[in-house]
Length: 616
Ligand code: SF4
Image 1: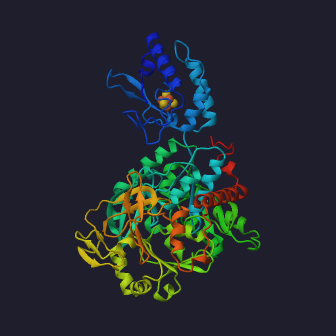
Image 2: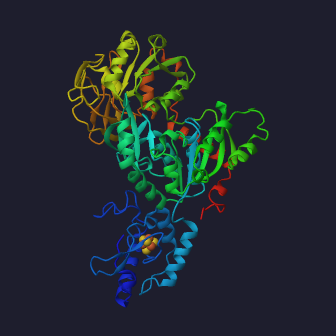
């Protein structure tokens, strides 16, 4: 944003003339979106709209948007737009562009600027309404409720973003900008119609085994921390500033911010160290909703107990309780809802039904134990590694007719497998040790040659001949160990750097693939490549066609039908599985719309926005 005047310091005729020329030139370019060619791009944030590089409302003198600063050039006061993200929103720029009147010789007079701004404010909030969903327990359904709210408000034409200050997940993905964020925040961004990016999930913890986690900050690997280091140093000294700056940016650039808490806000042992719940609610001045899962039993006690354990000023932020996951025929709730309100002073705003058969990625590896997807005569067994990661990779397989995906923990569970997948892991060395100790390595080797075996990421590394971790980057000290030897490949861990990138290309035999890589380590392979990546046809992965063994670093490789088809065609009795070529993305969209329709039907979304549908 340029300031060609010195605000109210310079109202000479000459200067107004310059305004007019700049404004006319901007209008002649049309709504240009992001001007990535500009040497100053991005002067506010990636993806900003640059149509009004010089703001037609300048100087608006609205303290909610900009501020007076001291000019370095003159020493006088000058109106600064540095903190204003409003004019860089696509929807605001678009509205203003359509409203702009003819620009006379003197530019826009004060009256015109004021009425343009007033009209814009009727359409677009200057600061987002913050709605926060917290859970009385883990598994209360917070993530999907946030997803539902994001899609429902987006459907109303509002600019929406999700936010979760701190997430612990082994299920992450890579954005187009190379940021690593939790898979569920990516889904919520999609529901909201906003670009997935690190600021939506500024702190991501990825457990590495034992008491250590990798801390990802704003999408980039930052450092490894033990639990002790995390709570006694990082949370106290670094996390508040990281969370505040990302939260503030999102509040300034959206109509609605739907925030997700983590675990429970009533973990009283973490008071003063919990940066995922009431800390964020207070910062955002959020209207809080408490979700409880009625399917578990004890929902009333969870609701009342959680609210009663909060401080009075924290409880006052709660606008309602959501009784979630009510099964059909779940019986009458009688006057129980009134009783919750009488005990806590917080009303029950909605009883939300359980939605069966949603096709959406799960967040937690605990959910895998209930997730033995699909019905069919072909069994694809995913080895349930203790540190399994990116397990949404296999969701698309269960879309195919006749395919059953199971998660196998024991050699016995591998016996019926028509195909085996070694998935990604957060710790290749530890999980390879587990594979051997549990007898699973032997069970996999016994099937080699008879059924297709695919390794993804850490699973790919395990399939090779050797894994060399000369610097102990996997956390167990320097080591060199034998792999399963099913691929003629060697993996080296020689730097802490992580490759995080979206990739696309084609199968060696034709057909589109796309996905993303998140890994430490590099693999040198003497096998033929599985994929050729764009833009330079770089070979990726390994493929021993004779023994039907494949390895790749590409997560999400089943999402497009081509690789699903290839993989299933290698199964001997694959006639039982019919590749429908189902569109994975379309299935997700359908589920998001079902979620939005459910929340629209059962919760008063206008009331949550303050009653006017705009939230002002
Ligand atoms: S609306 Fe924003 S960019 Fe325009 S003058 Fe005001 S503070 Fe500056």
